[in-house]
Image (tube, rainbow, N blue to C red):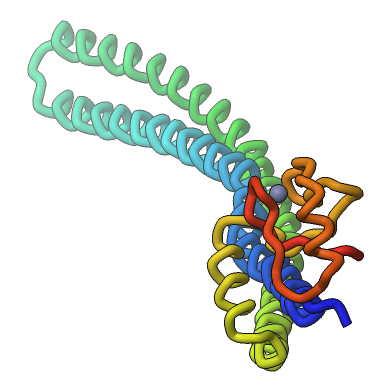
Length: 231
Ligand SMILES: [Zn+2]
């Protein structure tokens, strides 16, 4: 048996673990990307709501103007009852006529503002619908991602259990060497490719393939330190 075989088995589990751990790290990012996809629809809704608010304010303003001017006319009519001369009476009539003209303008503005209210309400409703539609699609993805994360975490747990068992099959000195190497190089155990290291591709001196073939101790690449084996 090749003496690196137990290390290769361990490396295979570590490879699986690395992929799973990367996926577990990526899932929260993917979730926030999904949520980010709603931003456009959320902004469109906020804009439609602001438009509706402006339209509502215009209606209220025009209504307020009409009301204020009618009150003013009422006051002027009260005032007319107390007047002594026709001249004064006529002057107030003129003032009332002016205000009535202003009321007409305010009422026209009110009608126009109310006309604008309907499409503004429709835009809000449409934007709400679009957001809701996208929200339900995104919610679906989020649910899938959560389910995937749960599976990945289970698989990580399984791989960690497998790793403990696989590590028991490795000679302690080999394990120490591998553990030191794995933090700097991935993968730490590589095949010889002809005379070259399968990791950094440096051609090894002839003594190296010879030692690897001898299969009695771990042989490291002269450049990157990876453990070499003959596949
Ligand atoms: Zn190398």
